[in-house]
Each structure stands twice: as C-alpha cells, then as structure tokens.
Amino acid sequence: MKAFATAAIIALVACLLLGIQHYQVIALEGQVTIEAKSKDDAIAANTESQATITTLRAEAQRNADYLKDLNQRIKASEDKAKKARKDFEDLKRNSKPVRDWAAQPLPDGLRGKPASGNKGNGSQN
Picture 1 (cartoon, rainbow, N blue to C red):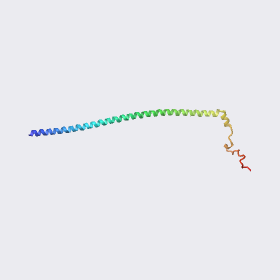
Picture 2: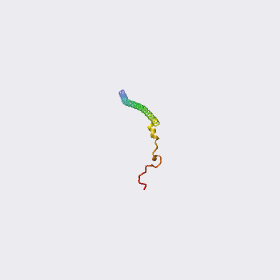
Picture 3: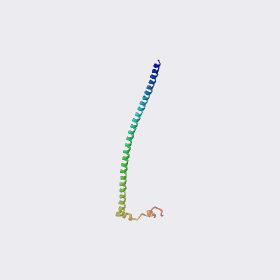
Picture 4: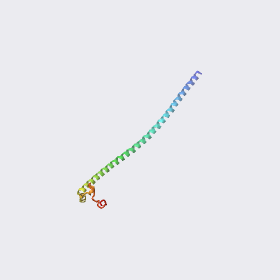
C-alpha cells in the first residue's frame, strides 16, 4: 500500500508538472501570436511610411522643379522689363516727336502762374 501511495503521489506530482508545463506552453504560444501580430502591424506601418516618404519626396522634387522654372521666368521677365526701360529711354532721347513735345512750354497753370484764360467770366464791370 505504501508503494501504491508513493506511486499515486508521484503520478499526481507528474500530472501537476505536466499541467504547469502545458500552461507555460499555451502562454508562450499566446506571446508568439501577439509578437507575430505586432511584427505584421510594424511591417504594415513601415510600408505605409515608405509610401508616404516616397510621395513626399516626389512632391518636394516637383516643388523644386517648379521653383527653378519660376525663378527662370522671373529672370526672363526682369530682363524683358530692363530691355523695355532701356528702349523707352532710347526712344525718349532719339525720337523727334517726343523731343518736339518735350520742347513745348508748359501751360501757365502748371508753371505756378495763374491761368490767363479768365476773360469773359463776368468779374469785370
């Protein structure tokens, strides 16, 4: 009977140890599942981040190209305006009709003198 009781205790301890190991295996399987899901989530987030980075880089390149084109257009406009000012100055100096117009005397009202066109307004009796 003593041997039977010892065998029963050993069997119970063995079952208890097997139960604890089985519980640990189940817990580890759960952790592996959680880690695998976390890894998959991290990979998906990384893929999305890479797509966003690619989009932002493309947008930055488009902006740089636009800025370069805009600066070229501004330079061309400034050069065109500079040429137009130079042409205008040359025209002022070299155009006979402009010189003739500029040589005319200013009207009295613009030179600070009273205008001489006050005749017939009824102020003299």
